[in-house]
Length: 411
Image 1: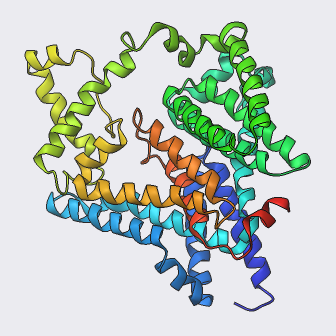
Image 2: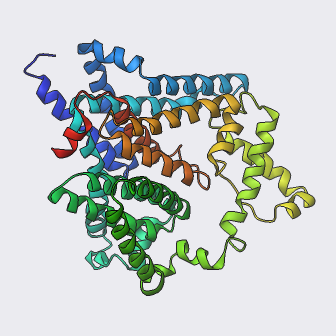
Image 3: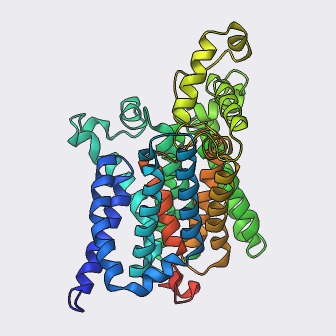
């Protein structure tokens, strides 16, 4: 690659990478198409920049991801399952590499990738009804019709997307100055609003826990600002609980009715039992990566033919591809070895957020913690949208940055 062509290569790579992130909201096929283009561009990048390839191969988080890939592959071999099932773990590695390269090309400006998905959410929420034929009357964001357009089927996925960017945008906004802060707070508010509309309780809980922990940590340095923030947050919460149409969403209704009558939660007890039973059969290596759907299908047949089994777990779902619990899921599919390595990878990404070697690392740490909490009720790592976001940002966070973090925030 010539020196004259390199600036154009950077622009092209950033555009396609940004499109891939933006498509994660509602356009799964767009994510796949961008991935193909980025594969070719990444190949050319490493061919002409071998020093960066060496840096990637010595990255602690990347090596952990490769280690998990090998354990997942081993679990498939030992359980005589098709090796094609490893493609999801392969996609995690590929997307991580895309994020790593994008961080190299943007350096301290990599934090601006956080803006892409919230802006895409707003644009799509406004434009989609008109262009889809639903009509511009759906511009009322409180309408039931609009709720059905976006939040049926994949509400938990969209809820987690809104959750992680509600936190990351307000985190970045709290650290910078000027008009950009107002924009980021606005984006965060939109994400919080949409999170309520999805009624994704696990994502809401994860956001509340991580955000509260961050506020407590920051209260040591700026107690007055935190006190004021908590006061306004309390007023907003009271307004939502008692005076807003949002009080009718499932997220808030279950606060008052309790979980004892929540069928959605009660169904998961059978799912967790299936995961634990299969883990006990193969505790070291599991029953095979991406095999939980098969495990569940086999167990549901036993369930249907056993009255005692049905009496023990009166509530079930017909099929699922995940254990609705991060820990039990990986124990059942990849055993203790797989769980330890994937948790190690998760911890490595989070710990980078405390090191401040990369401007984007702290908000990414929050994203991963929120996701980990949410995954206890809906383990969604195999969906292309969620996995693309998480592993792309893990790659962005893992690339070493040359300049100081504080300098980047003031730009």
